[in-house]
Length: 246
Ligand code: NAD
Image (cartoon, rainbow, N blue to C red):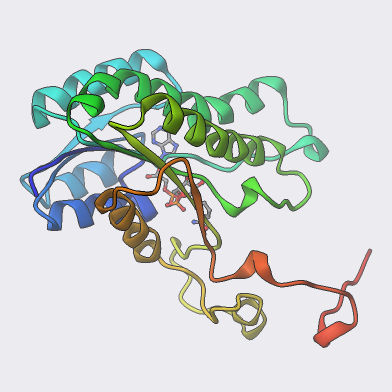
């Protein structure tokens, strides 16, 4: 389709799948990642795929990244804020600085990139797609930094949608458990915990990115893609569900 697409965290996992699917649709893609080797190997696979090395937590890096993206792509139609990483929480002594760093990757970078791409996205009637997590809405213990970044990006999504519409449509995807590691097999119990009967794949998320970029009547929304995991009601003792407190 010849759109200019900017993706964060494109070297592996969900971000890599998103880059590949845009490339295969005929778009040009520029991605940023900290993993230089994996990124160079991936970028060398496609002529229309460009890599910029850097950490999205640094606003100076983001400015240079978007200058690089404009030089390579000549236009920006789609921004996908995908990069994030987990962090420990309050029970294991998460510091202020560690909390702040996770927010810098998962929340401040999406804001700054939206700001830097704003004029291009308005001119091209573009799209912003943010990647949150089902952890924006539910938690395990000791996950404060990641949950806060993900909750923040859900709110950032509707705020940007109201500010940048009608030219730019802004939506968010909240994945559940997505298989991005080398693990090949999952236990019967793991599969049974997910109503759709499987652990998700990067393709499951990328398909939703494509859908949201190709439609024009959804904005400000966060769509959960988790195989229905958050919809199951669990009571100890009902339907064979057991809770075993320490
Ligand atoms: P991943 O770890 O497989 O890949 C993330 C990529 O982002 C890596 O290439 C990494 O090098 C890059 N990256 C991380 N921090 C960066 C930084 N500071 N600057 C630049 N690049 C950076 O992760 P994934 O599972 O593909 O996750 C992608 C997105 O989906 C993340 O936002 C994650 O929170 C979200 N998510 C994933 C799952 C899951 O089960 N995999 C579930 C819910 C949400």
